[in-house]
Length: 128
Image (cartoon, rainbow, N blue to C red; front, side, top):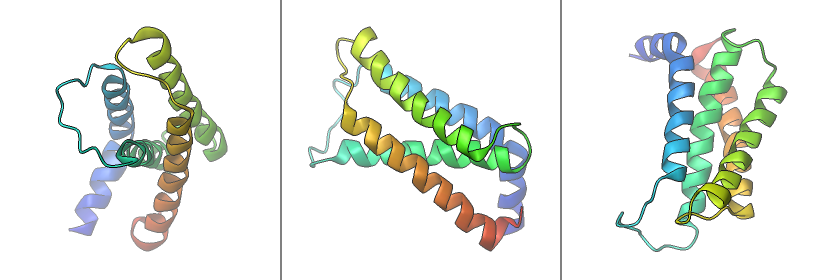
């Protein structure tokens, strides 16, 4: 089972990276009125952390597998810049969303967690 997951990740890491990035962009810019909200404090920030952890995990996995000619540090900065750009787009393009500095912080924490998760999995399972 783990061998199948490893092969799936190795074969499709770039597809997952691109798909998750596009999905986050779409979800960040569409009107979410009418979508149930849990109304917990900072739920939104956990969503940002999770989304950017997933994005960074797949982009950095693709980098680790040699599918991207970019260093981890460069990729780290690019993903954080991507989050900042999305926040700026929310401010300028939408009337139903707002950009937030705390979202940028949550995104950055997610990028760090995605990197840490990749390092842990690499040592335990992936051996890449």
